[in-house]
Each structure stands twice: as C-alpha cells, then as structure tokens.
Image (cartoon, rainbow, N blue to C red):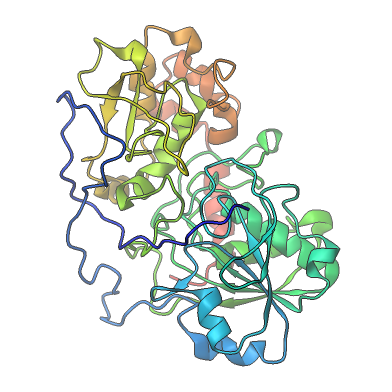
Length: 424
C-alpha cells in the first residue's frame, strides 16, 4: 500500500443541485472542486427528535468488551468517530489494536476502483496494514494468529455490487475458520429505504456479487452479517460468532447523508443515490462519469454526438480513474446531476429507462454491451445479476415485462429478509 496523507472530506453534498440541466452543452473540467451544496439540517434525525448514533459512536457499549484483548480492525476512511479515525480514537482510549485490514481502495482510501492494494505498515500508527484487496481477499491464519476480535467498521451504500459487503463475508469466513469473533459497528444504509432489482443468479457470481440478493438489498451490514450466518452462505456453511453494535434511533426509511465519501468515485450524495442504477453502465460501452468529478451522475459516449447536446470530456484523475473509457474524447449523453433522487423514495425502484433510452439512441448497438472493446467495460450480467437482461434491452422488452421476470425471486427475498432486520 502506498504511503499517502489521510484526508477527510467535508460533509457530502446533497439533493438539490446547481449543475447544468440536460440539454445544455457543457464542458466539464475534472479538476474543479465539486460545487454541489445545499443545506441538510436535521436530515439524520428521526421523527422522535433523537439524534441518530452509529454503532461506533456508542463506545460505552463495546469498549468494555475489548478490555485485555488483541484487536484487528477492518476499516477505511469512512471509519470515523466525529472527525477522527476510529483507529486513532480507540488507540487513545487504550484499545490494543494489533493489525489493520483494508478493503478495496485501501485502508487510507488512495487506491482507484479495482486496483490491487499491497500490504504495508501504516505510516501514522506503525501498525501493520493487511490488504484484503490484493494477493488475498480472506485473512489468512497467519493474519489472525495474534488477533482475538476483529472489528468491522466500514460504511456501505446498500448495493449488491459494492464490494465492502463481500469483504465482510471473507472476514467472517476467516474468523469462523479460526474461532475468532467479529464485532460489527453498524452504520446506516443510505439506500436502505427500498429493495429492487433481480436476485443474483449463482451463474453470475463474481467479485461484485457473491450471494442471491437483489441489486438494492435494504440491509445494513449488521443485518447482512446475520443473513450470511442464518442462510448458511458462509463457506462450508460455517457460522461466525458476531456481535452487532446497532445504530441508535435509526429506521430504514430515514434519509442519511454520509459524513465522508464512501469511496473515491462516490463523492456526492447524488452519486450514492444514483449508484444502484448508474453502476449498470459499467456493463456498457458508455462512460458513466469516470474521469470527471461527477462519477455515476453523468453518462455518455463520443458516438452519441448529434443525439444529445450535453457533453463532457473524461480525463485521467489519480486516485479516481487513471484510464477512463474515452479518455480525452468528448462524450455526449445524459446529465443526471439535477435528477430528483426523491423519485427513488416514491417509486421504490431503480431506473431502467436511462439504459433503455441510451440503447435505442445508440448508432452502435452491436457494441453497446461489448465488454471486449475496453478493459474499462465489464459484463452487464455481473452487474444486473441475471442472464436475460441484455437480450431484453436489445429486443425492446417493456420495463413492466423486465420487472415481471424478476419474480418470484424478488418477493421471496423480501420475505426472507424480514428474519434478519434489526431496525424497522
């Protein structure tokens, strides 16, 4: 892992945006700081008026359980108490942290999406940092030999193809194998207010989808850990001893604005709420904002010139996207930066109309889902999770018919999910 300076961002910016509307031709400068900003007072307070507290903030509930024990920490830049990293905060409280484990993007968050991260010694604390997104994704027996309890404190965004939930599974499997306990300091799910998308077909299991859950799963990681145990999804149907420090005063329907960006390319609340939909464009020959400061909120390609007026030019941005699709080429397409994300709360559905529209508009339909054209393009099947979606889009199948094909799996998942809920 490369040495970097650890930088926390300020509060993520949210719903009403000042970006240019669709239909206006704009040249985006990827080096300009993100301008999105609106007030968000009390958005993280439930109707009772009591302030939401994440698991990590409730130190009185878990510090007594750590006394005299050697602690491993699975953390990244979202792992904070106030504006202090949980590692630094717990060290000051006398907690014996012996190892740090980092997921995709690394412990300090400096690695780009999909880039392998090496083991290192954390420059600030002198503690060994083990990468779980490099040579191995599951802690080895050697990694855990001097650890009594693994603490997992990472902010998730509630989407199947976001890899931190897979890191949780690998950690639980390693700890179950070695008889270690996992303590999950739970955090809210910003997309926890709905459940949608097809349930993953095991044929398309991959590093961005391990279990038969829909795209938007409606769980916190604490609840998902219970599901992994309860459904026998861990390797060899092992059971991991887990302790979940719950969020206080939290409900799934509660809007939640993350205090720190969860990963380099989810840098606004708008991007987080669009992500369940716009990440599908990773499986198309379209740039979805990588190489700009607006990832997952704009979509386009050079070959759509004349079809759309809105334009942007992807550039290489270290730590976000070094080699974006269509780098230094003008892309034309959709500007979703001012899309009203409250729509997702009303419909309880991801948006399929954009991918359907862009396919119809494309003069290069044979290339639309062709992942052989660039290493930056993945398969649509790994993202949507089923094998018939590609052909449905090509054949012009209606959204109603596409959604009908997701049943009965989606309804069965919703019922199964109820067994593992920790929050209303």
